Length: 478
Image (cartoon, rainbow, N blue to C red; front, side, top):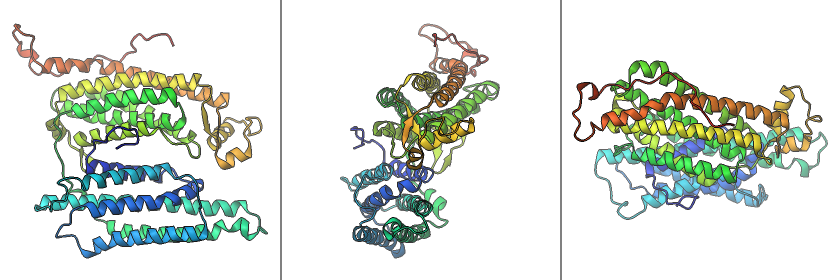
């Protein structure tokens, strides 16, 4: 069950891919203020990973070292938890929602692995290789996750050192030895998990089982569900975390659209010249402008702010659908291979519809930046951007306490105006991409054959679609 209340339909492999992805994302977004919550939650991640590990069927080629590694990691996690109770640090408090999400993903995978008919012993080399890949993905998630926790703890210790005075009391400095001890334990955990991963990650992933998709229907449905959920979430929670996730996902959709259209041009569904000179530049610009929007909103997230779980779930399903058709385990698949997996005529229509939806979502971003009265952002980021514009903290009415704690504060007019201007650029590029992609719907009509009773001309059989030059369509008044 997903956090959004809907049943998670992803496979074990897709869940493990998402857990690994979330761990990598976590590593890019931690600081000292996250240390306490991450230490509280890390044990749940390790426990969920251990449950999954024990639920996976055994294989004859798994060495005793491999099995013992997970047991040792669980033992180390339990010992750290006991030490935290004895030292009363970090104590009670909220969990880290990101680590909690990873734990829930691993627990869902464990439920699937332990389900009816799943405990049958595998008997083929391909099945053994797939199980090895699953174990490697679990261990890599723990390896990257432990490193993220370690980064946060080290930063916390450094932050305490900077804030306490030379003659500070033991009470004021006690977080330093506590943090150092936790950092040592986490470092040992990370090294043990890293020793398992070693340089075998790519080799293990090469054995991951791949089930060919039945078409592009899943991608189409994932994009429809994403568009609906993005509008719902941004309507009731138009904050920086949700705007960041929305922009990140739109950038990913643009990248996936490029992969699909490369395959379409390779097989003649779309003119190579049109792809090179019109579609590719438009999609590249679209991907970049959404990525920049994601970076801006990501920097505006303040301490403790997290994206809507329903939006996270919808974005995860888009990633899984893209990975199913466009990836060969750890890398993008060749255009010729992708062309053999899906109906490119229908997929190009899906791309066109995604570009239309992206243009509309860009307007939503602009409206939020311009009209949402309670929009807030990270005090540290707002202070930094204000200084870059030549405005000091006193003039910008930003308190040092807010900056230190990285609290969410209301956006100053200057920052809001900048965000609106950036969103206007997002609209311009998205509308231009929508205009260029407008002719892709012709692919489906050409591939579906002539109308009943009308003879088909030879020129209609499989001619590549010619894309009109880009241009701005008429739009409603802004």
